[in-house]
Figure 1 (cartoon, rainbow, N blue to C red):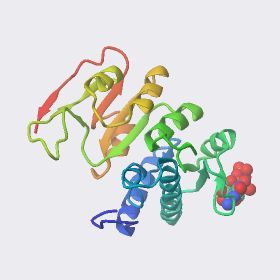
Figure 2 (figure 1 turned 120 degrees about the vertical axis):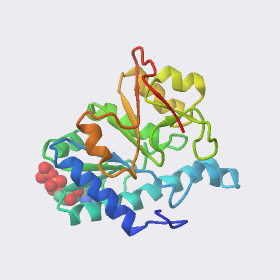
Figure 3 (figure 1 turned 60 degrees about the horizontal axis):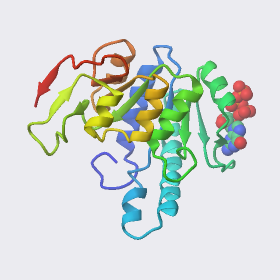
Figure 4 (figure 1 turned 60 degrees about the vertical axis):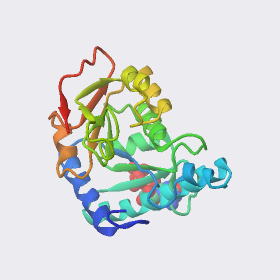
Length: 231
Ligand code: GTP
């Protein structure tokens, strides 16, 4: 959305495309799972009277709009990109086919996974965890507006503490809402690390891929908090 209150802000999509280009130039295989909250928030709509399943499908359609926007900007920067949709709409995107996605990645294409898991009641985060498992990803980079996971919402609570490392169990036990419990559980069961970082920090994706400490690392084994920052 950028500074807009709704929709696709071209400058923001352009910025994200440049961040991805910067990351892809390192030679990594990168797949993107994109949300749709800038256009439609399924959970909020369901509270306002739209049936939850319908609201979730509307949210999934919003992710397809975002996927096409991002694909356009990536291609402007000569990043070969394929969009795969979990809900078949073959006139505008490939259907999600795991083996084909892996093949695209091997050929150096960035793959955008749209339409979540294709099922209501599953979030974009869960779609990201599922796709990550399916394609054999080494890490999930969860892009947010804040620079990691905090003990409470840093936008509202000035005493919120930032964690540099957490375990999956920590997140579930503390009820931290950075990602929903289904997606965290999936990562926990399959030992897939997650890095939660601020997308607005220029070069952050590249830095994480180069092993620099950015944001919060979520992992399984004795994830003792390395450092806590008072904000
Ligand atoms: P290779 O098999 O490695 O050559 O991959 P490719 O993606 O370049 O080849 P393909 O012929 O499968 O696709 C060519 C273009 O058509 C790509 O931009 C695909 O994303 C797109 N495409 C492939 N299948 C579909 C589909 O079912 N629907 C839509 N809308 N586009 C598709």
